[in-house]
Length: 181
Image (cartoon, rainbow, N blue to C red; front, side, top):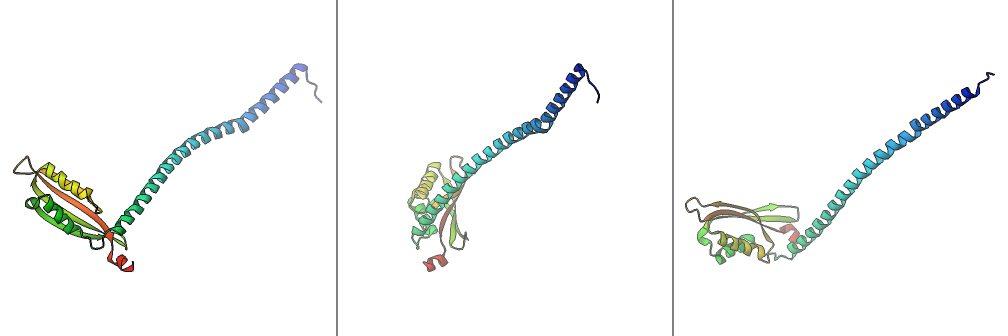
């Protein structure tokens, strides 16, 4: 065996301790620190996704409840209700017959059990107050009719008056669904 001096033994022990420490750092501590950094980054991302998911869940519950309320209102609506005659009576009540240019009705099937009636009303030469009054009567009625589109422009001949196109929608049960009930 080779005899080592005390200094050589200390140097060999120091090198061995350094090699062990370096190996421990390289194979255990450094990967653990990298993994901790990765996990901290992933945890922050997952937390943000969780917050978004909770918000989406609340929105889903809100929309689901509103959909159930809407379905209840649609089924409780009178079967004989027609949107076009209702709007014609509101036009007469608002004294807008002279301003009425056209009223077009269109029925679109939404689902097998539901359809939507759309009435497009074109009005000319009216003041903003009269238009707002008419829209208020539509929105505040007990009927499930809502203004979905409103296009207003200044009248070409009189800048103090307005021309507008109003689109009013009403959902109702299809006739096939009514026959089943």
